[in-house]
Structures are given as structure tokens and as C-alpha cells.
Image (cartoon, rainbow, N blue to C red; front, side, top):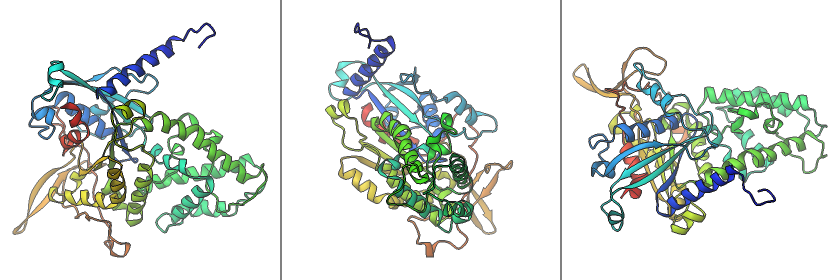
Length: 470
């Protein structure tokens, strides 16, 4: 503000936008939905499918369990001009074109935070609402962001020493040590008490970042920190990213030591990168869906599945969950509904999809119980936001074999495949199948007449926003 009291137009615009959203919140007309999940969980495809189903495929036969559609009360749904002017708009057209082309493919993963708003025009048959206006409008603001950045949130509850101990314990596990052996050897020889050597610090930090990329490419490990090392954007090469875990943690050290420098960079990363991201976005959500790719983790083995369980619990602890009433929605919005979704469930036979739901339930039982205690509505289900296979019966001698039929990712031919039976809980390491699991990943099915098919996406929408469309 200037000395004369004049506020620049940009500030006035922001105030108007904030006031408008606050008014909508007070009458339950605006809902912020966090689409959460680690890298590869299918967030981009989920948002694309959600928009496609609601804007062009919102018929009773397609969304029978979404009440506003099945009851014939949805007038129309459309995308709205973006209100968050400093956040890139989710590129729906690019993403949906990947799914609708003659040989469909999955849309590229998210490389930045983006958002998109859907406006639902609907009629109400309940209470005063049906008398106040002929139609009503709900604004659903969807937020998508790189799964790699999600794993940075738990850093806010750690100091540098704790983070080092966590990361080195992870890298020393038999599953990951072969990838990390060279880096571990280098840091074990590193003199943390020597004076700062920028070249040495940069070399080791880059080696550690390359290790993170290697683990991401060759495993399904979620706990890859710092997440910005994988998608740095404007931070590429910045000293705030050039830190790595150390095995030794001196109680006292010279202020100009290598250890102190790494510790300072770690704290600066938390303060300057992670904290603003958390405050600007994660503290503002009303509803949350957590997408989990259990099949890929099962393929990777016991250690990865347990690490995914651990990472999910830590990330969930960073969200502001709690029952949201009228005043709290205005002053301090909190998530009051959380859906855990085992995505890509059509990678197993339909009668075995419930196993994935039970497996996810067993992984998150403690977290879900804590959420319910705090007044949060919680549900778990298996979904496929975009179907990639069809169910088929194949004659095998005198017997019929139930299979799935689709085109594996990277292949040119369609195949019939009998997937393994997924467990309904995490088996003990000693009881893990000797040959492990082998679930195949498939390309999306061809969209018939331009329509995408799904599994339980209507259940998802009913749980997350059905109560706001009554």
C-alpha cells in the first residue's frame, strides 16, 4: 500500500477473489479437493477422467451411484475460468487427447502444481435450498501437483540429524543398498568437520540426486527426499537443494564446517521451499482423495510395500484434518472427508478387487482410526479412473479361465492375462511369494464413441461431494 492509502489493482483483485471464495464457503458453494498420491499413482489421469465424465458423460447409466446424476438433478457441469491467477491451469485438453486418440496412452505425469475449477449447476429437493432458488451452483476446485513434492511434507517435523538417520537406514536396506553402495562409500569417507568445500559438496549432492533418480526408475520407493531434487524446476543447481544425508552427527562443530553448511541448507529448504508450499495449498483443502498404486508396489516387493505404508502415514499426518463447521470453514478450513483409493484396480480380476481394498485398509488402519476420532469421514475403495482392460473367459482344455484382456504398456499387441491374486493384507516377509508378484501395467482402453470407461468413479464423486449437491 502506498503512503496515500492507495492499494495496487492486483491487491484489490486478490481481495475480491478471496471475498468471493469466502462467501461461497459460507454457503457450501466452494470445495477445494486435494488429489493426493505418490508419483505414478494416476493423479493426472484421475482428474482428466473426472472432468470428462462430468462434462460430457454424466448419464444415469454411466454414473448410477452419483445421486445428483441418477436423480436427474444435475443440469450441467463445465470448467470455469481459473481464479488462482498465480497457479497454472490444469491442461485438460492435452491430457484428454492422450486418452482419446486412436492408440490411447496415459497423459504425462505432473511436473508442477496446477488447478482447475468445475462448476456444477443442479437442482435441490431438500430443505430451504429448494425454495431459495430454482438452481444452485457448486464450485469444485481440483488441485494436482507432483507426487515427488508430497514426500517433502514430513521434513517439516524433522531436523537434519533425524532426516539423515531415516534416509541412511532406508538406503542400507538389502532391497536398495545395491543402488546406493557407491554413494554410501563416498559419504562414509566424507570429512564433515572440514572447512566448506563447495565443489565437494556439489559433487556429492549431485551424486545423491542421481541416486534418487535411479531409485525412482528402478523401484517403486516413495520416500525419495528432497522431492525437488527429482523435479527441481527453477531450483536446479541452487545451493538450497545441494544437501545429502551424513552418517556422522557431531554434537559440536565449527560454524564453517561442511556439516553445519549441510544442516543450514536442509533448514533453508524446509523454510523457503516446503513451508510456503504447505501453507499456501495444503492447509486450505476441504476434501482429500489419496490415490495408491498397490499393484506396482506389490511387484517391487515387501520392503517397498512397507515403505509405502510408512510414507502414507507420515504424509497424512501433515494435513489439517478435523470436522469442518460453518465458522471453521470460514476461518480455518480443515479436511472433513478423506477417501483412500487403490487405483488401477482393473489390473486384477473383478472378484479380487476387494482384496486391494482390504489390503489398503490394513495398511492405513491406524491413520483411518485417528481421522475418524477427529470427526473426519473416511472410506476406502478400489477404483480405476480410466479402464485399461476388459474381462474375458478363455477356454483352457475343459476349463474356462478368467482373464483380463489389454495391451501392456510399451507393447504393440493385446494379450489375455491371468493376473496373480493380490493379498488382502501385507504378508510377512517370510511368507512373501517366492517368485514375488507380477501384475502387468496396461495402456488405456480405446474410448468407444469418444467415451471413457471407469470403475467406481461415481462412488468416488458421491463420497467426496455428494453431500454438497443435495
